[in-house]
Amino acid sequence: MRRKSLRFRLHEIIFEADTSAGRVFDVLLIISILASVLVVMLDSVRPINNQYGHQLYLLEWFFTILFSIEYILRLFAVGRPLNYARSFFGVIDLLAVMPTYLSLLFPGSQYFLVIRILRVLRIFRVLKLVQYVSEARYLMRSLRASLHKIIVFLFTVLTLVIIFGSVMYVVEGEAHGFTSIPRSIYWAIVTLTTVGYGDISPQTSLGQAIAAVIMILGYSIIAVPTGIITAEMSRNRDEIISTQACLQCSAEGHDPDAKYCKYCGARL
Image 1: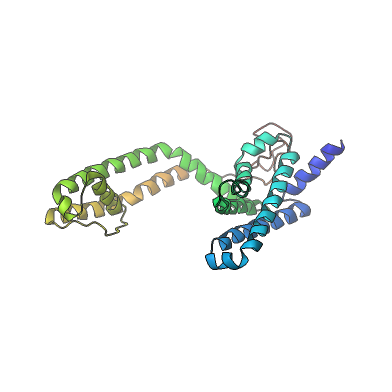
Image 2: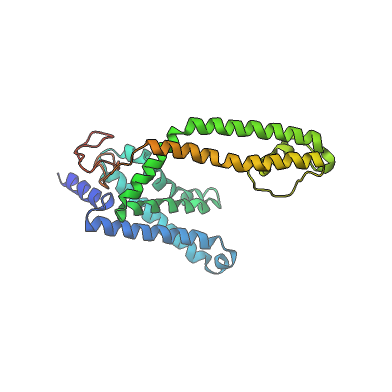
């Protein structure tokens, strides 16, 4: 009973933002995350590293140990720790501490600690901005629904750049920088996406005419994926969710009147 009481109290502090203790914990956590990311960024600046490298190294280990303890407490606070470990935030929490330990074997890998910035996404729950969490879910549903259409669109674009690249290789040739079909396809991609690096450019009148067609086509193509996703978004309705986390699997995103977790069935 004492262990269950401790687990419930830890869950309330670590996972919930409705209590004062939980809110203070999350605010301090976000401050620590931002500070740790700042330390990693400063460590990559050579003049600062030369002068304060040792202090930054100690701070990096301090935050790593701090987040490691927090990760272990999160696993202890939920009834099904493996469910949390496999969740989005569970994976991010693990990746937030692994680079420092890996740097003992692979020097330089500690700079991947900037992935900790993803943990700041918890601020949505801290500030109770549930409408933004709902909008994010709404957008993800629309992206998943339009995935097949986007794949067909990208395949069509890939076909076009291969055709245009091959044509430009024949029209311009090696003398004007189109030394191979892959390099010509690279030029077609740069032109079709309206990036226009300018490292390769057509010199013949026919090549310039084809390039003009590709440029105009690029402007019209840009709007296609936007239209596909917008159409799917208009078919989905928004939803209202709460910030309550499941005591067993730590899952969030439940309806405000939910009594049971919709992922594991545990009582909320």
